[in-house]
Image (cartoon, rainbow, N blue to C red; front, side, top):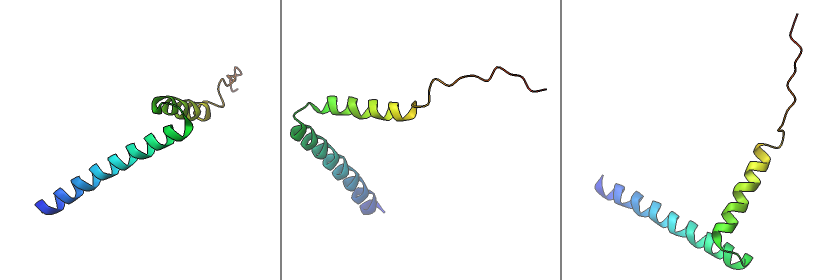
Amino acid sequence: KKKNREHLKNLRKQRRIEAQIARDNQAKYAGLPWHILEINKNFKQDIEKYANWPQLIDTELPD
């Protein structure tokens, strides 16, 4: 059990490291700091999430 937990912990750590390296490489190739790329990603997600705003409110009440 202890070996398995250590193995899983190491796998998670390795994934975090690989993700950080991927972000660093993406920023390097884009010629931008990685936090700018992160801001752009969040902005694009917000545009998609709120694309249908503002919506008109139906002011008619049902009979």
